[in-house]
Image (cartoon, rainbow, N blue to C red):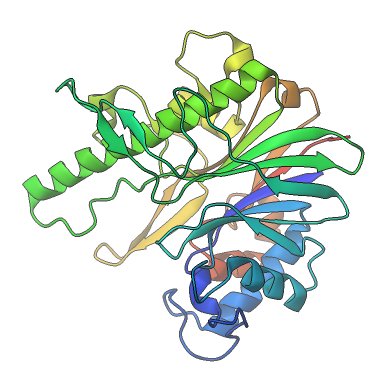
Length: 338
């Protein structure tokens, strides 16, 4: 079975309010890319992946006037994808939903959010002390994670959580001091979201539930100068990499593990253009983490990076499609699920 996560930049801007594709020559929200070019590139990438399920990060908006499910299923129909059913969980107000596109012949899927005493449901509020004032801060997800219960056609049951944690970027801040304050506040909120997610992970692992956690964590080891201030990255928190629990309570992603061991040489899942520096910045932000019981099922990970992955680089149409489609690249997991 092939499972993927893919952050699609400005996916929402490619559909009208009825969910129809805006496949025309007008500019998309991506730099120097038309809406038709981005849609065709995305269709090429999704078709090439041919995944059984794709966790779509920054999926089209779901609101009173728009439907993420309708838009995604129209996209799947346009490009002949077998993963032609879509499901979302709690809609948000950012126009960037978290959704799963999947093949209903292979998987049955339902939104099944849960809560424990120390981890409320993801659409609710977590009280947690983020600093040293001994007062609980009230934390909410701007994009509540998508918790799904899945079962394969062969009867194997497992869970999946799609996540898009808060960005650490100090958007709107001007001046060194303001940027520093915003960066620290954003990282504090992001770590609180990671702790919340980790508590849910621990509850599922304690139950012995096979689990995948995937999406854009907007973080990785060594990505900014404020990491040392807090001791560890969101990725390490979600993995359980620095906790004292046994291996049975840790998630695994080989790219995250490799980056933690060698912060000077790590893979990338995203590529952003820095206009003021006239260059590209690459970062490891996207992950597919799995529980220990899934590691025995012959998992193989691959980042579909147009320059770093040999097969993607050699396939020129795919390489160009990956560059045109989004500023992130798919992370693909092939795994033997019964």
